[in-house]
Image (cartoon, rainbow, N blue to C red; front, side, top):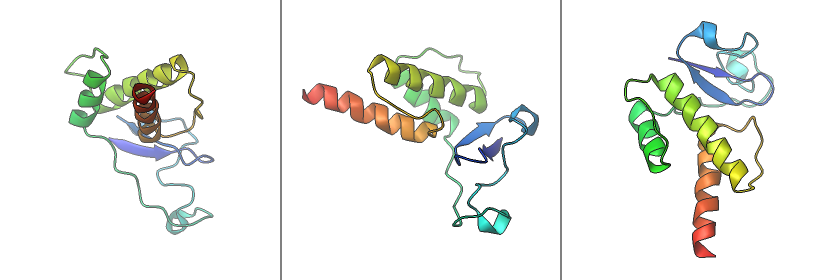
Length: 115
């Protein structure tokens, strides 16, 4: 597992292998001054565990193979959450981290229940 950060947005993703990451993505947050970034030092976000991703997918009714690797599960989660946000008409930035998108979707769902 390798966490890589988008050089401009700071978005992070987990990749099974360094070679699967886009070539311009960084092994550190672009604002991490200790690693050569220009802004404030940033602590790496805690990546999802396999169990967490599987639970989120199950809650969302998304089918998946229990033998899938974390990187593939995370990609499926990211795509599923984005599709659900689009279906609900919720605006989001493509560069937003998956955790933020899950929070946005959860808020949208809870808001719909209250209406």
